Image (cartoon, rainbow, N blue to C red; front, side, top):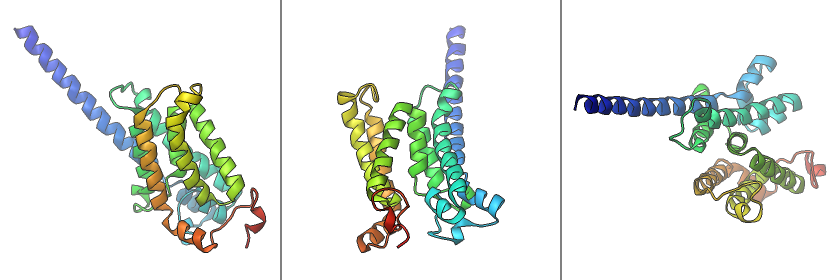
Length: 231
């Protein structure tokens, strides 16, 4: 009886420890996502707060516009890395009770509502890509190709982000049947999260949608419509 009692106590303590570790890693994932890459790079190396220039957004696109190509690439990589590291946390710390995608979601929330930047952040695109990289590198490459192709056709990062998000979400359902080498099995949690992220991306691009309708949305010097980039 005494052994059973001690075993029950040990099991209860182990469960509490797992719960505490899970909560702690969720917080770490959110804090990773909260790192305002564009803001810090701008302030540290350019003495500029990108929130005061361009669209006022802290993400990659505005960084490219305000700080230039090199800074934009650095911020893009940092924002992707945030999602990747967050999604990898349960693997790195041996936590197997929670799907890694949920930690990626925490990073996405941190990126869009960063505690280090008064909860005003980016539009969730790069960090969402990082989540895919941490979850499935092949699917990340596939998704990146979709993004590049869409950008080549539209020359608008905002429109590309929304179209690519829709196509990637659809791909989570279709690929296990037509290209299992990229996505071996049906993961409805991935589809559910992809739908949520897509809706979130559309919400974060409300102003861009209005400008697209008006024909005033900014274009990048890449793709079929690059000649209109500066108009």
